[in-house]
Length: 386
Image 1 (tube, rainbow, N blue to C red):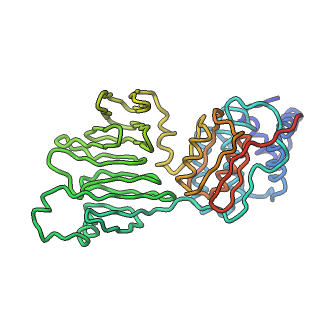
Image 2: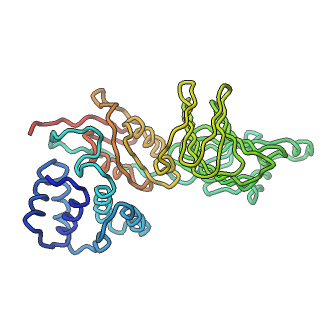
Image 3: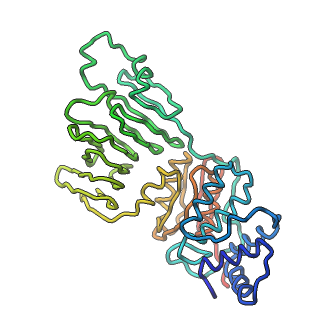
């Protein structure tokens, strides 16, 4: 059977338009439909919709432009939810190089049981919102609902602090930006450095930097675009390592004891008490189990969250579940029969409800997702023999 995803996508697109298929194309389509229940379910759903839907943008699908086209559709506020789902599915087929019906590494050809792979028992869960709070040096909390520029919005902070003692102003005054789960935030520091802070993260920063260095403290994940200042190096300090830069773009993921620094532009030095390494664009420095290693990295994957995308490439379900937990602020349980070593691939925007992400994951895996309120149960789908 022809399993080329581009050929399959082309044939499906022709059927969307009620264009005739030749005998070979019909054979390929029939074989694809029969290969897996997911394929038949998707095809049947498509064929029950109005075939006069505007699908001109599906012409000349290619790997590089598929998701760009979908993002332009998303900007129209999902005026046609079903059309968006069709677009996402077809682009998913075209953008991945594995088999059409399964994108999980090492999956076999057994069919799934007829039971649905997704169950929503209550209200859907909306994506994260822009918002955070700042814990000021004096302990007071200030809620912030928009992006914040410390240099131009210092009154937000100054109005809450007592500057009657002039000596205080000469010292470094640190505040803490707290971004809870189901939130994200962008802050511009006093030197012009822009920081995108991911959900379930904290950034401790000074109101004004000192004369010799610029230093912030991170728990969680953040992407930095550091303003150049050759006289004052910039440090990102985590519980395990420090990152030293002069002016560069990089991502730091420091959830727990493992710390991963991925470089997009410039040069950074990652420092631990016993080791230090310098990385160049396209590399990451990973601190894990007491060791610091440099690896070639996939920047599209590492920076996907900053670009508001879920981008899974050969990711284990625990890694995927952690991302969903932080972004949607939900409790996730894995059944004992869920294989932790299997990997999955898929891509979808982060500005969608949880059910849409789970639909994509169900399509590319042999897992079942049951959502009840803010609790998600992941189980292995029962299989039946051919």
